[in-house]
Length: 153
Image: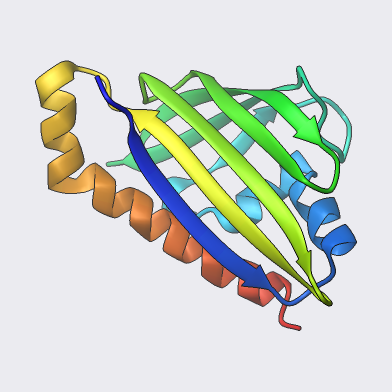
C-alpha cells in the first residue's frame, strides 16, 4: 500500500542552536502534544539529546481514552540538521517522521515529513478518510501553536 504523506513547515522565531536543543530532547515531545491524547513518556534513556539507535516508549490515548503503546526508534541524527524517528510498535503499519532544521537569519525553518500507512487494509483506509487524516492535521496544528508559544520571538 502506498504511504500517506504529511508535510509541514514552521518558521520558528529562535536561532537554530536553541531550536535544535529543544527538539533533540525527547522529553519535550509531551509539550507539543494535545492534552486530550494524555501523552506520557514511559521509558527513555536519561539524556536530553537524541542519538541514533535510541528507543523511546510512550503511552497515548488518541481515541476514546483507549491507551496505546508507541515505541519509537531514532534512526538517523545529524546534529543541528535533522533526525528521523520510526515507529516500531504503535497504531500505524508504518510511521517515519523526519524533522529537518535550517537557519534563516536569527530564525529556524523546521520541516516535518511524515510517511505513514494505516493498518487493516481497506478498513484502515476508511478510518483515514473518516477521521485519522483530520486528527493528524489537528495534532500538527496544535504542535505549531505550541511551538509558537515556546518560541514567541
